[in-house]
Image (cartoon, rainbow, N blue to C red; front, side, top):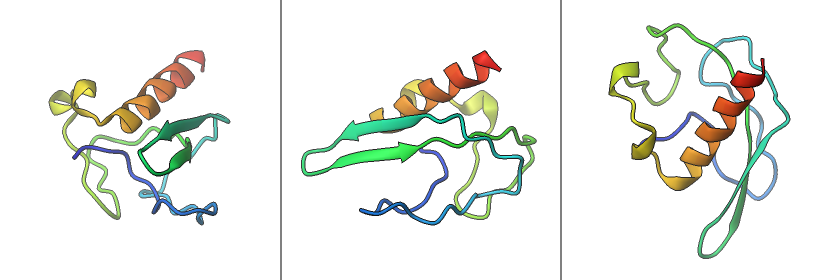
Length: 89
């Protein structure tokens, strides 16, 4: 399943562990999503990285292979918020 690099989902705020070294930006945005048995809040962090960057965990797919419609709902919410945040900069 496609998704964005992130930490484990825990009840308390986890330690931030960026997947790559980059100039990370906190746009002050949060994704909220409700699953059957719990509510999830994800703090959004943004960075621009080179296409050839290899993350420390997971993998990036080529830009031309990315389809936002392929994301699960919670990850699509994050994508939509990120797109809006970059458009403001």
